[in-house]
Length: 216
Image (cartoon, rainbow, N blue to C red; front, side, top):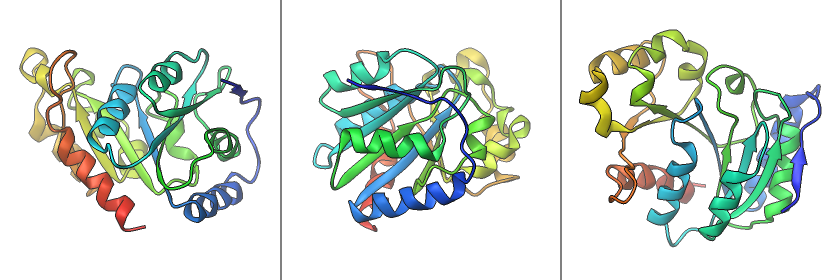
């Protein structure tokens, strides 16, 4: 796997994002910008969705500050993956997305762009995606929509992960939704992806993405 290094921010990100949007449309690819804090379960979420959507090709543009661990693990599952290392930058930008998309070279399917783990910077950069998906995990707390307004107001859909831990950490679902609804009407899908157990709730999220794909 060739690892793409992101060296600098590019002026004109919006223009490049529009070019990416045309690129994905021409190839009939639903581009999903997956954002979330470190440890929210983004990679695990991609893996579970791909297993649910067995009839739709799934590829991944993986963004990390360093390493290619997640991309390598997804490739073992049979998913086409490319790796972008930001070398300290806290987000991906539109320029490197095109490089990552060219590397996986897909026609027809869903491409997940797993952004760098961060609840701030990724909300500021359009990548040319069609869907903005936020993985928000229960252990992070139910107050996050109140604290990270730009991110929660930016997304199209929220996957609330690690829901099996609600009772253990005292997570208040009503408070979480209250904070989200103050800034967004994005639907929330509650999922639990415990290791060695059948994923719970992933079917409804996968169905949501399937409908977006079929509407292209």
